[in-house]
Amino acid sequence: MRKSNNQKLMGSMVIVQNDNVEKALRTFKKKILESGKLIELKEKEFYEKPTTKRRRTKNQQIRRAQKKRESESLPKKMY
Image (cartoon, rainbow, N blue to C red; front, side):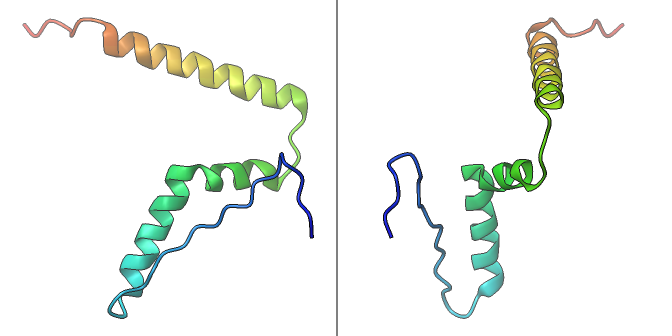
């Protein structure tokens, strides 16, 4: 089977050592979260209309800007 250049086939593999499946599962979940595959899968689970997608991304941008502004501002006076 041939895949086009724009499709990536990357697998995530975790080795179970000393029958410690719980630790291997934790490391696997951490790898998946860091790679962003879980978020991508959740986004593609249902169809999202372009207008709702734009609204969601705009709200995310606003929240990110507010968070950045709050972190850069001076702390409140404590007296």
